[in-house]
Length: 90
Image (cartoon, rainbow, N blue to C red):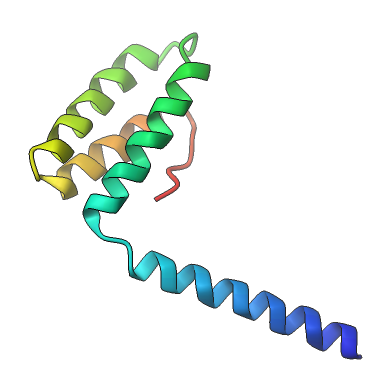
């Protein structure tokens, strides 16, 4: 019974900390995280048939993030990652 309680408490703590982190993430931080994720994904997905279109979308998103249009940049980076079948991390 103690083990069950300990595991339940640990799981609840991890869930709460993840929600708290996501709530405290700014759009600029999301842009940075998604750009980093894109750069890593781009290295391993270049042979994907959708890569050229995804690359254009990601480039536009990164440009928007640098131009202080974070919400639009985030949407473009999300779309680029999804085009390659990758779940965005931010």
